[in-house]
Length: 221
Image (tube, rainbow, N blue to C red; front, side, top):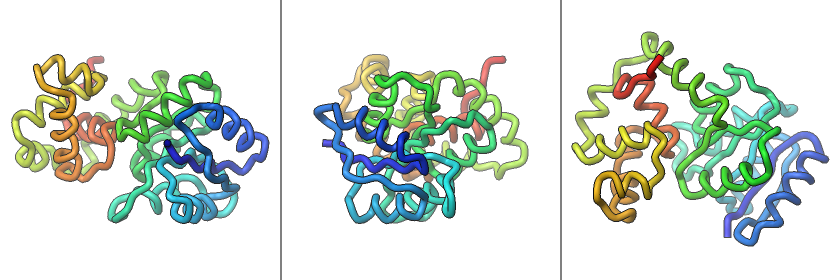
């Protein structure tokens, strides 16, 4: 059972998301929060597997709360799925840099939201399809102003881990990666579990962003 906390300052949105997710057999909404501070407290006290987090909330906003739950240096991270009305690059990149495992717009279809929660719970991460290309292009343009860490990162990865990361960057699932490399799915998952800490990231999505950001793969323009 996937234990979910929903954080949004609008009661109707919280109720709608709770109803939508709670209808699934494998998802349980264990708590709700009206701001970021409540979200962090609820996620910790209720042992949440995923927090569905709005960005613009009073007090502690969603990005700050995300950093507290799963940002750099957090020893016991709780995965965060950002769900927002605002299709604004500043929010999108802020959320990813804070450690979010996924970003979804509130106008997404219900089944997309449910699949996103499951994906984040598995550690796969998710990104709204309409935003994916913009994210990758922006990461390429930002690369010039960020520390050059690609060589160091690739040096600590095994050749097989590099192969897997390149396929993940093409949008492949674990099953597709396994088929492409003639591996068992469990073997792919084991490689992922060892790879993510080496790159200093917490999800597949963060690993893919890292790969584009540091020039391991490039966006075709």
